[in-house]
Length: 316
Image (cartoon, rainbow, N blue to C red):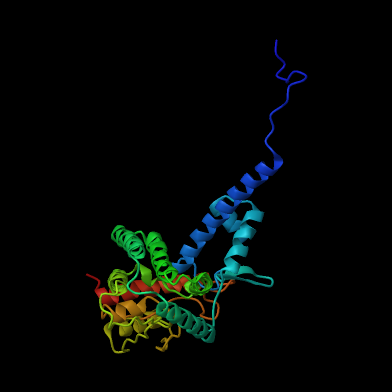
């Protein structure tokens, strides 16, 4: 009858402690990098806006993580320049002033222009094949509407271009500053016209890198800011919105310009659809860690929206 215990004189097989620790560390690193990648995508695609608070308990519930793992995730996002910590608030998605945005893009322009001038033309066949393969993945992601895959393929495409410089220090700096500006990017990635434009630009870059036209020079231009958009207060939608708010609140709203980024610019500039921004709450707390909207304001807004729909589209 066996007791399950090894007989005397027989060695018990044990996994070395160092091996267990190494395996545990690798698993933890994989989990952290996966969560970091997901949150970076959320920021780039506009699901998490600047100044939005990243609450540890919310992240624990969403990803099924222990608290110390969540903190490692936040530390990594902070290192990447996507998150900042504020006293008595915690971690929030990083926001930049206008000067900071311009400075970051100025550095990117210097680095990427320098890198473009150092790419040997024509580009080596293996590099061209790599770029074409990545761009086919980018095209497939666009066709499938997989925006997360679009983002990653776009990053891979540009990294592959600058890898052709053969300068690891320059490449590391370019990647770092590109990553830091991810928080500045808007959700324009979701718009078909934008994606089609990027598709054409990428294939044009590949053709330029073939070096078949030596008289063509490569120029790096970074889009530093989005185009402004304006709708006339005399449009039907503007007049309807003003009347709806007046009928709901008893006070006529003031039509004024808005300093910020919204999807209204795509409707106005690309689709030629007059658009107004109208909503409850205060801009002073919008997208901040302590953002809030009074319930009565939500109720009033819903009534105003109903009046706008009826007034603009017609009751019939």
